[in-house]
Structures are given as C-alpha cells and as structure tokens.
Length: 304
Image (tube, rainbow, N blue to C red; front, side, top):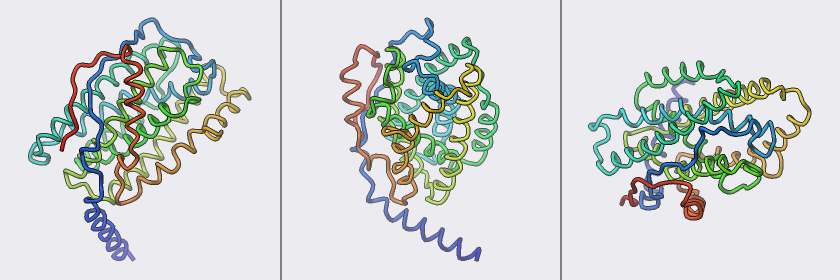
C-alpha cells in the first residue's frame, strides 16, 4: 500500500516536471515597480472604516494583522536562497524587486496595525503564526518556498477580488480604499514570482500541494479566529447584523467564498501557473487611474 502511494507520487512528480513547458513564459509576467504609498496613516481611520460594517472591517483588519509576519517570511524564504541553488541573475534581480514590494507592504501594514492597537485590537493569533513560520523556515528551502507559494496564491486571489469586485470595498474610507487597492495591484503584479522560484530550485509537485493544503487550513482558522476576536473587542460578535453581514460577505452574490473556490482548486493541478489567469489589466488600470496615490522608485521590464 505504502509503495503504491510512493509510486503514484513519483508519477505525479514526473508528470508535473514534464508539463513545465506548458507554463506561460516569463515574458507574460507583469512589470514589477517599487512604489511608495501616499497615504498618511498617522491620522488614523474609523473603527468601522469599511462602509460602517463591523464584520467587513473586522475581516480586513484581521488580514492586515497577519501581513507583516507573512511578508517577512516571504522575504526571508526567497532572500535566503544561495546563489548555487538559484544562479539565474535575472531571477535574482526579480527576487530583489519582489522583496522591495513586500517590504513596502510590511511597512504600511505595520503602521496600519499600530492604529488597530490604539483602537484596542490585539493580534491574538500572532504567537501561533510565529511558531509555525519558525518550523517552516527550518524545514529547508523547498518547503519554505512552497509555503510562500501557497500564501501568495491566496493573496493573489484576494487581490483579484479587491480590484474586480466593487462591493468588497463598497463604502470604504478613501485612504483605506487606496491602501487596499495599491496592495492588491502589487500582489497581482508579482503573483508568479514565488512559484517561478520554487520551480527554479527544483521544487516538486507533491510537497507544493501538501504544503498548500496545510496552509489553507491554518489560514482559514487564523483569519476566522482573529476576525471573531476583533468583533468581540468591539462588542459586535453576538449581534445579528454582524453575522448577516458575514454570511453575505462570504456567501452572497459577490461572496469571497465563490470568488476563491475555483482558483483555489486550480492550484492543485500539476500544470498550475498563476499567469494562466492573466488579469494584469486589473493592476494596470488601477495604477494608471490613481498615479497620485503613490510614488514610483524603480521598475523592471518583463524578462525573456
């Protein structure tokens, strides 16, 4: 039985390796640009900044609270790769600019989270996330980068929704709308970097999928737990309107669950690549229409 499972895993790995030629070329990837956001978070924002809706606000705040830890792990996972494992200079340059974007996101969300702390919010799932990230970082480059691939896929799916489903940000305070849209545009731009790196270092199909399944469970648990705690501290947890909004946010016509369902399953395919869903126009349109929202500090054209 065990030998049969191993044999099947080897076959899947072989199929995944053979199908690499079917992935979009790196020429299809969006240009990476380093940008500084022109939003002053020192003045704070409303307790229910997202359309006066406690549930949607608590959910997006929960996401923000997890970002600095996650983004630091993304940076460390690809930044720690030795040149012997990843000798391609073009890809190493791409990693540098991926790190630049993620460092900027981390900085902005650290500021964001300080406002939440001043409002009485507590990052209750932080210690458990830190412990898991420490274990992942000790598991070796393949597993660590696989974890980055998994969470980057979720941030890319959420970014697609922020940019393409207006109801997700309906009624948001202008600065917060800008912050989330800027973050989404850049997440969308670099959504394939981690998985391209994973393949370049010889990452295999089975570990990628197993890590993704585990990351999916913990991500769902962490966001639910943190959102619930945010609502509890606001005195909103047991109010009927909170959970009516929660059901609508996840399961309504524009619900997050429906937006994530098929793209999350596509990750399980051996031939999966983020640019199979080419949505560059979402980032390009928002960035072109909101040039005053940021300052550009560098750019890279697509690599051949």
